[in-house]
Image (tube, rainbow, N blue to C red; front, side, top):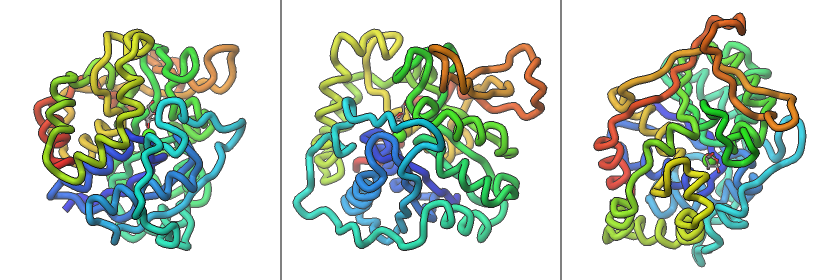
Length: 317
Ligand code: BDR
Ligand code: CA
């Protein structure tokens, strides 16, 4: 089995990504670490528990991590994901917050990866605060990872949060900088523009949500708020080439669970802008080789979308 550790800021697309991983028969999820991002870290933990409950997987441990970015203030994704991060559609029987582990997310991340050296794929679909803190605590951590899969950053300076900033990088630029510099392991990036170019049709989305299952009904409820927003005129522009279903975080999970999912990558050193009037949090891609960095990230370019659709369908079955 593939061993996965997920680091999330459980908004709606994180929920989709988690469900995709839970449905994969070849995967064992060793834990889910939480960080602030789309909503407060307390809400993130509760949201993950709700997702695990609807999937009957409450035995997977959930750990609470950073409540703020390393520097600067929180951005939070409330406009899009709702105040509680899951479309403000509460479950009357949501699991109690007592189920959150006492051990903190950063310690758990270090412990779990050290327990399975060379075997764990770490999937981060959130601001990278926990990952940055973990590598500061244990600099040997990246060398013990099988791979790091990140949803975040951008390749054409297209922002979805600031002018040039993708949410996960813009929400904690210092953390993104540390991770892209210090994780000397294979890094696979599902960047914002890539997810836009690989969106799924609204027809697929309708079929996906229409499945007769508690999971599909749960998704329909939590997704309503952001789905309505996604179909508006403003998003025609933000989504780059018109709207459709962009389950951003699910691409990172899909890449981690099936090695044949990625069909083509660009390979370049990457970093993150930390200053600049408009560019703080923007990912920079060193196509000319002047950054003096040897490590090249695998930037997803082409993926198997048929496989992706099957995984998405299975997630709500
Ligand atoms: C990313 O930002 C968050 O709002 C989403 O959950 C996703 O991880 C997209 O830019
Ligand atoms: Ca996310």
